[in-house]
Image (cartoon, rainbow, N blue to C red; front, side, top):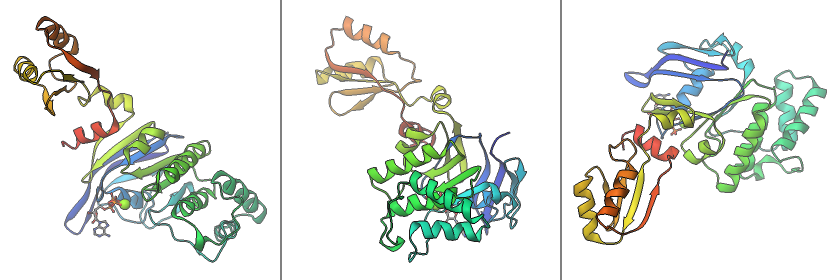
Length: 300
Ligand SMILES: Nc1ncnc2c1ncn2[C@@H]1O[C@H](COP(=O)(O)OP(=O)(O)OP(=O)(O)O)[C@@H](O)[C@H]1O
Ligand SMILES: [Mg+2]
């Protein structure tokens, strides 16, 4: 059984359809990247998972139980970090987590133990200052600790790294990686390198539709984004090469790139170049990046 299953979900605000037939499955103990540009529908999807919005169509299942709008039964399995987390800033991190534990009915001894564990996980054990003096990165780290307090089976984080610098982002990604031992992680982002770093599976949401989903390996099979590129020595040879292999794309004065999936193969081009005595500075195979994949599937 998957931890999260979203089946044929559609959602409109008035006459504006913002999610269209969204299907997505997140296996247990995965770190799943939910990728999309601003306005793609990421936050709306998360609110539907939490039962905070009604869907127009479709079903969502969390840990095998169906989510119903306005009911919070399935939220017992979920820890949620919203895109802009709010805190009682006059509290210290330990006070805040104790407070959250108290209002969610945690047993005080267990709550203190868990608070200690989580502050250590997010690197705030030594932090005795009040939250009001915290940086954005510290607030995000505390937000993850709060979301993990009740030992959720599914941790949902809405753009946890978007407002952070590279160091802050790395800290959050390391925490999410460590959290995976205890939970399943679904996080949204538009930073593709973050997904490449820690997710084994991901989905691309674009204008309310899932364009593709799966692992990097699965995506690569269907992708024509990478091929090979070369830098020639003479400008006149660029023209000659493009006449013989017209699927190439000229890059600058001396460069030509061939996408994977085009008919010509690197070996064929190389043999022809040797025969024609065309000299080159470099020739290299390109690897598929998530960015090239994303641009390909959104058709840019
Ligand atoms: N309550 C609402 N009423 C009307 N339209 C809404 C509402 N909430 C979201 N939308 C619209 O739905 C679309 C998707 O919004 P959503 O916030 O889910 O996108 P997102 O992918 O989270 O974007 P971002 O990266 O900017 O956070 C947007 O066009 C937004 O304007
Ligand atoms: Mg959002």
